[in-house]
Every structure is written in structure tokens, then in C-alpha cells.
Length: 146
Image (cartoon, rainbow, N blue to C red):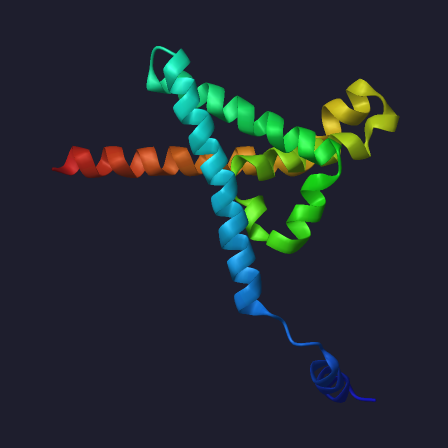
């Protein structure tokens, strides 16, 4: 069988993907996570002096929520239905780091969990720093020209 024939056979036998349903799940679950974050922020603003302090509390609470749901195995089940809806918010980042740490916990705290949990998160951190630097550089060049 030629590769082209095989690809055609594969395409004919693939089940249809429910794209609209998947997008709706991602939208609603991602929106629910953001709504929970907004509720936490509103509550934190009642206890903290500034909005920045309330935002820090909210980030910590959402990271804790993502970590707990990952440890209980619930986050992965939600992610199967919602896809990118759970990958985009900060809870998705917490899920990534926690999953990697849990996978390598048998290798010890330092060489296992301590080093391997940043295997996936490391590029995200580097990308964030580099993109922030590039945007700041562009902004300073633009403001310097006018």
C-alpha cells in the first residue's frame, strides 16, 4: 500500500470531530475557572489593602486549586473534556508543574521533583521573560522616537 493510499484510508475511517462542542466546552470551563478567580479576587479585595495584594492572593489561590485538583486526579479528567479551556489559565500552569513533580517523585526531592518539575515549565518561564523584554524594548524604542 502506498503512503498516499494509506493516508486516504485513514482520513476515510477517522471519526468526525465535534469541533463546535469542543469549543463550547473549552469556552465554558475556561470561563468558569476565570469566574472562580474573579470571585476569589473580589473576596481578597475585602481583606487586602491594595488591588496588587489581592491579585497576589488570587494567583496563589488559583495555583493551589490547580495543584490540589491535579493531585486528586480531577484536573486531568476536566482537561479531557475542556481541552485548552483548562490549559490557558494559571491553573493549567500549576497542573503542568504539579504533574511533572508527581511523575518524578520516586527519584527523590532534589533530583526528582526539584529538577524535573521545571522541565515543562522552564520554557514557559523563559518565553515569558523574553517576550516581556522584547515588548519593553519595542515600547522604549517607540517612546524614544516620538
